[in-house]
Image (cartoon, rainbow, N blue to C red; front, side, top):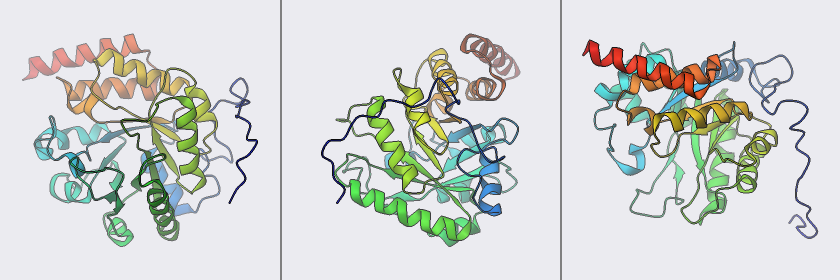
Amino acid sequence: MADTDGLIDARDFGTSGTPAGSTAGGFHVKGAHAQDWGLQNRLSRIFRPDTGRTVMLAFDHGYFVGPMAGLERLDTNIAPLVPSADAIMMTRGALRTSIPSTSSAGIVLRASGGPSILRELSDEHLALDIEDAVRLNAAALAIQVFVGGEHESRSVANLAKLVDAGQRHGVAVLGVTAVGKDMVRDARYFRLATRISAEMGAHIVKTYYVDEGFETVTASCPVPIIVAGGKKLPELDALTMAYRSIQEGAAGVDMGRNIFQSEQPAAMLAAVRAVVHDGLKPEEAYELFKERSAAGTAAS
């Protein structure tokens, strides 16, 4: 095994030079310039070529928690929001039953599962065959990676298997950083977790924003990082998190509860898009949210 004696903590992330989210090789997605045409095309369904960024709408929560607030009816609560998202993250069951096949959003399918919220969440297995993903025209497959969790080794092995299948078929893989309730959420942990996913071949990594040192997380990960929305926050706080994430090198956000649990989900999605793609500051985006909310209330 690798020698762990005498390891020196990483220090020089070059954050004062080349921007952490920069790309190379003429392709707009970080780390993907040497990938095959098909995989690059699929990544382009997720990340807008003009900005290199994405606003992903996540509603795959039901695969382990069942129906939660805002996701009681996917057909009425979520489907109307899909046209405003660059990409959507869900299970194949949700896609087939509740999302119109006319959708142009990039499809990111949940590919791991097993335990419910009642059991040990890290006890996941692969739960999707690559052929079904291709049949559903998936742009990417999402899998939890439990670095530091009880079943860490299996989750990393699951990721490696999925990457092998994805490379054979030109389908991207999104490694999702899973943080247990007893784990420290700091930049050092997220540098470890995101780098492991990237080194194992993930084409995109989803993780959480931290106030201190997040630019070192994005700088040390050779593939795009998108930021999870996490628990429901007040709208201005969520927009501030999105803004800081982009400013510190993230290539987008993957929000769920901060959109579908908002009193005005469509308005919130529009505000998040304005932050990610148009560079609006949080306060400006919040004003947009209030304007869209007022218009939506008046229309109803």
